Image (cartoon, rainbow, N blue to C red; front, side, top):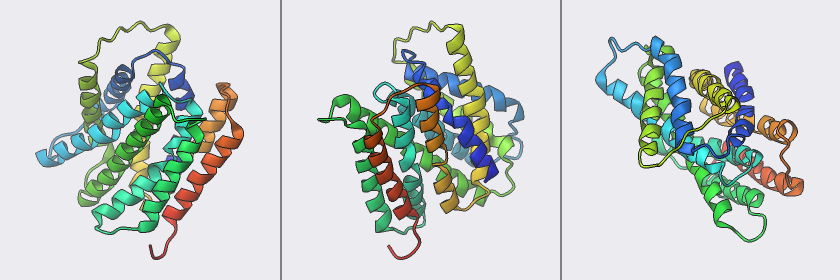
Length: 279
């Protein structure tokens, strides 16, 4: 659990920093972050004795959990403020619960209802008056991001349960490689012009090496040491921190009543999804 809490603190600053990179292409930013993360863990990669099927599975998990997640996540900042993105990640644990149930061939109707309530809470935050294309696009993108991140976590936990001899450090480079390939492929059809100043380069370096590289490694390592319910709840530890950092450190403005209403609905949704008992 301490590892997950440490990563939550690291990630709390990422939302405002990403928003400060306005104008930088989302696919390029995703590829750059994952390339840096890959460079961090490439020296630790150990493929000897690793079955090709397992290596392919790890690469595929990384393609989903990091590649697809980052593409949708970074793109959502075009339409949403940093604190809105932070709050909308609140649905991740609900997806963790639903996906874990799906793989176990069970279904909790309470979790489905909680997911709908969470979406309603998210809409209350980002839809200021009549629904706009931007608000709707941002809401959809961040939920796709949450789904990809949740699926990666569930798949990684299941693979590690089947392969207890694996060491996370030895194989984490494969996850980064899978994510990088997906993000890089997304940049190819785009006409991207890169002109970064020193501040932007330092921000990308922090996001890639610290938030993505060190953060995701510690997160996946911590995820193997806690129960699924604990993992689901700790997905949200970063949210109040990130909202506070975005509003106080980065000076964003928010409609506080709407923020409290939407955040409250999403919090109730998570509580409903995590309650034990009959569905």
